[in-house]
Amino acid sequence: MIALIEAQKRIDEAVKRLPPASVPLLQAVGCHVSEDIIAPINVPNFSSSSMDGIALRFSDLEGDGPWRLPIQEVITAGNLSQAALKDMHAIKIMTGAPLIEGADTVIPIENVTVESNQVIIKNRPTRGDFVRSLGDDIVKGQLIFSKDTILKPIDVGVLASIGLTDVKVVPKPTIALLSTGSEIVEPGKKLKPGQIYGSNDTVLHAMLAYDRCRFSGQRRLSPDDLDVLRETIRECLEDHDLVISTGGVSMGDFDLIPEAVRKLGGNVLFHKAAVKPGKPIFVAAFDGRWFVGLPGNPVSVVVSYHLYVRRIISRLTGVESKPRSASAILTDDITVEDDRFYFVGARLEETANGIAAVPAVRQMSGRLSSICGINGLIMVEGGVRTIGKNARVNVEWII
Image 1 (tube, one colour):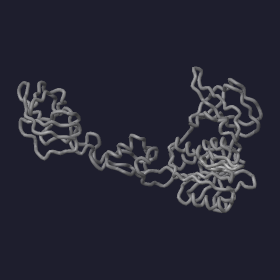
Image 2 (cartoon, helix red, strand yellow):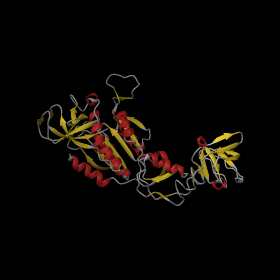
Image 3 (tube, rainbow, N blue to C red):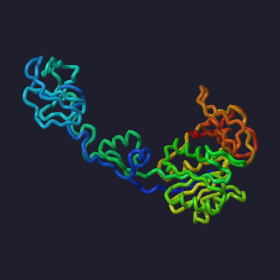
């Protein structure tokens, strides 16, 4: 059994970034760009109108107004006129439509009067008004994003505007979830005596979705059978960067995860950490792929996901993911019962006096409902004692 700080240090030293890969734009949000991205085109790649209005040649407005010009044609967005603008004529143009050859100024439609097939202009515009020039947004050859930029939602829209459908990034890991235990039954099926509904993989799936991690959709159940478990793990590792299991990592006769992983050639990073809840944590490597065996108790699953899985994903993607932390005022007593580092589920609330930490009532590793409604964890050094109401404690948000 190792200290939490040592377990996290081993993860930091061992887990490396995934190799670059081209992924669809929507999968690239939150990822590091793997190379400089240069604009292959101008945006827009033609001069256009930024308003619904009348386009004309500024020099045609001679003398004092008002001016009356025949409307040569109507141009809508997506249509390009093949004719040049005639002398002393105007065109009716829509927002985003290409500017006709010879036109250099646009007047918004609400600032003119259209009668029959003519436009009456009372006030002289400024040359170039409401014209969006070639490359007004992005110029061909411009550096759009440099290597290692982390793409945000708006950024992938910019990439779409230069015609990209895929982008080379450090991808999000593909992840498979595996629930172990012959007593586990999928929700929706009828329970037999001695069986329980599995909730751990649902909680993990929800946490991964909250963290915007890529999840393959593969959720597997395995009975407490060494051969079946080993084959299931092997299949999951074939096409996933990370496999997360729940259950089967403690010291019972049917806690078979460590043996199955070793038989498959996994290099064990550590097994057991001085943490409560979540002591029987198990982490192993398979040539760049990772296996994390979480405890079977659901509260331990939540705490262990926060402490280890998020850290591994952060290292795989190269995107630093430090939890938000703070000092908070404890609203009720909590009791520490041994020397392990304690994590107590809490509802963290902003108050006029700072952050209040409302600890979970009757928290036990096997009671998922005991941490219902929490959004953070109280972190307490080990040592048998009671920490009283109104004491200052360190907290981290988990959601």
